[in-house]
Length: 184
Length: 204
Image (cartoon, rainbow over all chains, first blue to last red):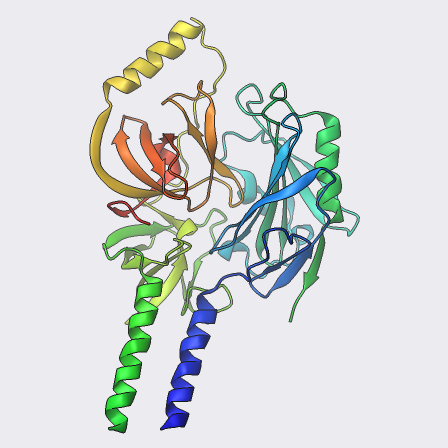
């Protein structure tokens, strides 16, 4: 009887675990974010920035970074699983045609995106706002193990509403320094 | 005695699972749409690592029985058993995934007057509705939908709504919804084409 109850309790625990989509990182501990037990992202928060919030109840996982200096840009790291790209290891594995669905149909994005490569050899699509006079932004999009990883950069509240090349380079450096560590 | 205890615990397990899994009991029909044309994976549990039960091609209609509490997954009956698909691949109507491009916020030929007239026309259709829940549905998986202070792309941003952000609709105009974010109570306007219906009444 005790065994039966123990087995059933185990089932309950297992079901609970299955529903938890991502492990909960501490609010200030951004250095390692584990995604669904599939991989871990580690990186350094840029100087002057702090992790403002982490939302990882389901998908997408959202990590927001802010700077006390309101003139500095703020950015978000967003991770979302793509069923239609499950099985794709990296963005590098996709042809230009296969990448199009990741960005097309978004009228706020300039369709003429560029591609950069991080120090770890990961290709990243760099998207810019189609209407910078409305909302200037830069989005850096890549794929890893079926997950879309996007870094979205926005001008600071106290700025002139536009991103500078230096700020974009800072975001590229941040993304370039991210390390994707497979688990399991 | 043993049987009774086992049945009681099983009932408890089922209750726990159903409470955790269903955020809405309202049944609505949704349609499958994957941008790259691939069929959508159907899973046994609301987990991307769970067993694959099958796939559904674009345009397939499914009757949603409920959502996980974070709206990441929708549940439905597939071949006689409960199954799950990711909400981000569902649309409200068949083969209408591509929204009409948002009007450019560039200045109109008549300047500010044109913008104000356009917003006035929009506000003429303003009407309060019985509250219902929608989810933000950006075009890109890691993109966002703009929450604005007024029903016009010429007005400032009240925030970025990432995928599956839960919103309670307060009022409607022709192209916009006046909404309140369920997570922080901030209100504003969102273009209705970037939302997906998720049920009647305000959700927690």
